[in-house]
Image (tube, rainbow, N blue to C red; front, side, top):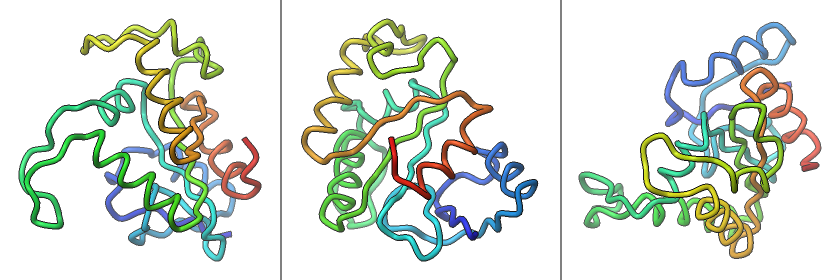
Length: 164
């Protein structure tokens, strides 16, 4: 099997995934993807976007302005607008987009996010959960919690089967 990692994904951000691939006979190549961070070669209907924490997802779902000019030459947009554009591209392209979030084992199900407390922002776990549900209802984007150690195996399972 060949796993494609998006070239815009920060190198070394998910070493656990590259180590898992090399020890399980999975070829990992880097190529620009339309949406998400990972796809299986020849199976372009499912993509997984990995987040290293709920805090990273919180940032993506925030109204914080993005510095600089975006690739279209427009004025800066918010993180939320950028995230919604990606979800919208997946929806329009009929690609099932799954957001796989690495987090502590105490957060096993989406409902557990309601108890999360951000160490850096004022957003509550309840607010974050509301934003996740809104994104799912608009675009069908799925959100899955996993631990760092389970992430690589879960990533491959999701890409192979698409089962949540």
